[in-house]
Length: 415
Image (cartoon, rainbow, N blue to C red; front, side, top):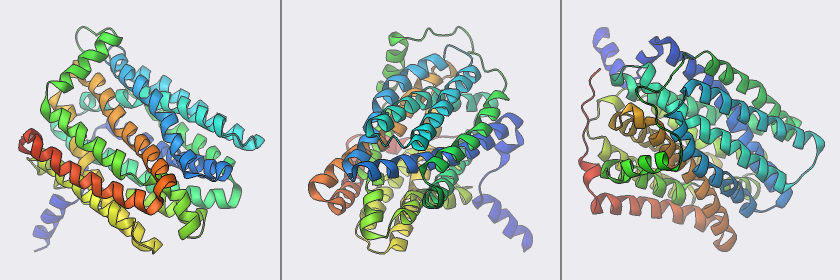
């Protein structure tokens, strides 16, 4: 029965059909390579901040420095991407992110060692990310048939999470062997691949009459979400998951006090993404699930519980395993959040809704960094870690019970 085994494997393995489309394949490869370097820089900044300050609070403050520009420019960037050629916006904002990496490299080479310079550079980097991410997300439904959007999102999130595995592990080795400057230098090199891929995309101008970017356009996007409970609740459960259960700001302290130093920090930073990669490789079933809202809630609950138990583990490898379980659940929830949003909205609103998506999805973990770091300074890293995970699971269930529209949501995408 080899034919039956192959058929079953195709139903389980990741769906590769979007890669048959040249433009998506180019975007996919460029984003995946660039994200390895991006994650190296994220780890290097966190470890460098801890080395300068010896405080998890200041590591958490990195999240706050990124959050404010992320909110402002994420919403505005979404409005802009509905009014201009999305390819042009993606290229120009990516250049800004690239320039910031150069600034981090210079800061490290000169040995400045300033927490404030680090925070300022992170804030500018967040501006570039906030402008580029809505454009990138809104491009996908324009270069693929809508039925392939769930598979494309799964591939994109899998590539990103693979970068979140390779980036931190590579950062741990590079920083130990060569210092922070080498990590930033590798990021700058890898980011050129992503920038080249963006340049090679076709023009993606607005369809129909373009909107005028500004406060009114942003408010229209927010109002669209507020009037649709399914979208609103999908954002709400993600905020709960990331703000309460993201333990990332605790990794530098845990690595030093419990697991032996920066080398183990690379494993901690990579663990969540490891689970996401495994889940992505076996994600053929994701596009066939019709009750996507219920699947989203279940995934968030699993995430919170896995993080909570990881906070109690004393073995590095057990912590990595449990965080990987949480990462697998996080990939599932991320795919369904993005798919619900992209298929629920008309094209003329996709940029603005991707802006809201970026603010929630990228801003939530940064608020989570601040919460985790601040709470750890008050009650200790274990209480901050475990308590946040449990609270996320409980509140996600409570939200689903209080507003069941998300749980009842069904889709009928046919490839």
